Image (tube, rainbow, N blue to C red; front, side, top):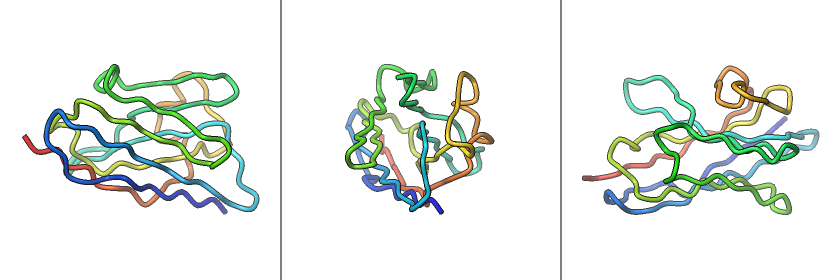
Length: 128
């Protein structure tokens, strides 16, 4: 079974930065991609960013392009989401997730339905 644990959330002023981490593990767990999603109160879960290792592809939601960067450390089995120039509308619970079948491609890399393994989430609050 997979375990995904997020950390790094918190309260920050608009214009500030945070870096989220997602450590993933599991005796039989293997994945070729990891994604970040977020959910604000009263809203549906939405795609933020995904990194796919083998293709070296990076996917970003339009709302975070140029401000957020997703990266990975294979040695540590950890994925990061560096968030700069944060805005109040970025306030949400942020989740990391791995694809149900170990990979994603194209539009699938931004579809929450493709992801079958989820962390518990970490709260990010941006004050104005």
